[in-house]
Image 1: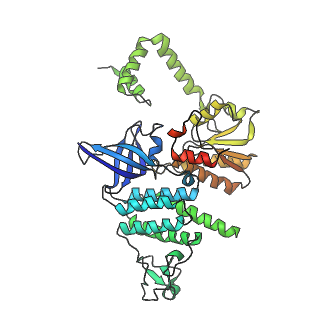
Image 2: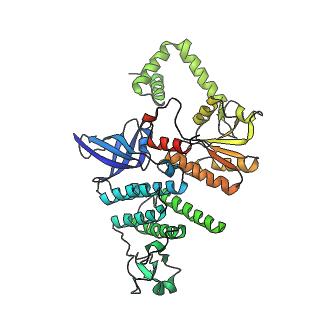
Image 3: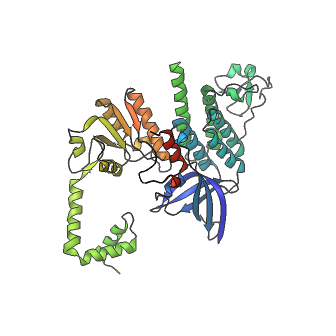
Length: 248
Length: 197
């Protein structure tokens, strides 16, 4: 009999059988790890399997290859501040769905586990949008698709970076990129060498940039493509930014 | 072990929620030994319900009449619509007797995992209802789950897009009657504190 105890962040729960569910967690040492939870839809357990909930887990299975069963205990539930804010809830669902769809099962990604925990904590702060973009950049890097945003791909001034090449994922300086700016992605101001505001426009630029690489690199060969939650989050954010601009 | 009709009956009973094959066999045996008292009246009741009950084309409620008795009731407030996920939720609100407006049953909530998108819910019917009738308030009565609240946010966006002056409200979250603080989750206590009276 195999058994393990660890902490995990709930990524998703697929109904299985009449009352149970297969719950996917992001854990420190086992990466994305799934297990069967008996009675998952009972009133006591239902809140445990909401995406983003931090739980302590006891996993047991006959052999290590089996799906196994979970016993979960809540460590930190979902903040109502996140639940009531459409953009923050969208960001949380997007992050969870990306981990659920892109990470291989049972492969440790300690950085992503702590990163996702930190992101959920940051959702209560004002700079959560920029934190989300940074988390997606780290997510791309963890999957082997690192962006190079500290020097110019065309040999230009590294202090004047303004664009990102959609093909190579490398930054391009303002002077080098100006003739091709329609084809390049905007580098969000808060990622520029000299820093800049992490305002809504910059976050929207960041989401467009990471969204491009998620679609073209990470999910290019996935049958389902970029998760719906990620697409919906970017669209909602862009709509909110457009609303701000109209009101100004 | 069983002949054709009995086997079929056991299979059908076992397909009901909450029942397995053992319970199904026990129920089938009980029905067969109580033909006159239970089995035949049950069969007639099932047939009558299947013939008479349909989904209300206005709100999605289940009733014998078309439109349903809630939609026909002139004493109800026609300017308020309460949006619920399922007919069971509608019945739960009706049980309280404290709401006297109209309803709209969405038919579920958005769920990427279950493959339920906006097109699978009766969002368009709700938007038509809001546009064509003089609706002043929409109460979004969906579950306090991630899927429920995501659906609520999507509905809010849709409603504001088509009619900006509609008041949109949501059910409050807080301490249930008979609930002890010590046993409540942190999120519920935090919300209850924020919206204290």
